[in-house]
Image 1 (cartoon, rainbow, N blue to C red):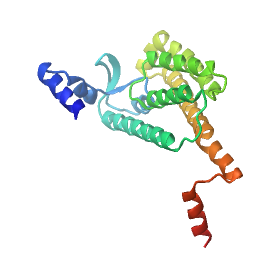
Image 2: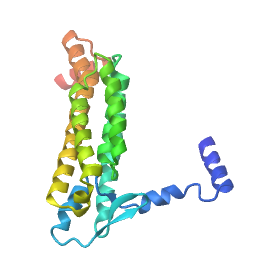
Image 3: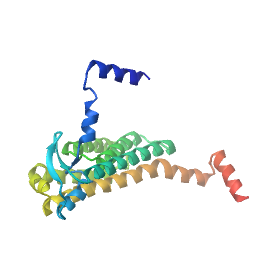
Image 4: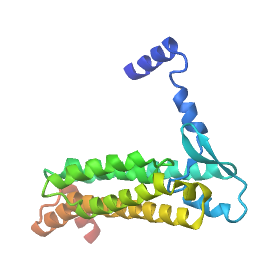
Length: 224
């Protein structure tokens, strides 16, 4: 209630304060994003869209772009849902868990975003470094993948960005490698976080017979 009231006051006092929501709605798909790979490929098969500087980034605009952007948004919602489920089911927290969880969250939303700017990789590198400071972190491999992806990003932008804009084979190859590394890092990081905080504690509890009463009741009912 207080948040809504504050939003209403800001909107009344500063007309246009919420215009950024409209800007986000009207944006296309940034040409370096994961979903943009579909449109890069479509350009070679007669797709009639265009590449244009739009809202401060170079984006694809045209037919089917809203569909690709919508798919990216849906993936981000799925990522958020996974994080909520993880938090509800996590049973064991080590000193590294807050760092690992933050790294995984930013990885998820970076990889699924319809905009992947080079500075996003700097955020990931910083979080990866924070994870690796804690010896119990399970993010060593994902952190290395992010570092390699950052190196590829330096080639893709600014050095060879013209090839990306043109959707030529070199540009598409660079994007495929960089985004593939991000996808791999995301999947590995999610799995390791889940195993360390959810799956492994449950297995240990099952081996020692430390199951919750609800689980025990369901087990007996099933046996009958």
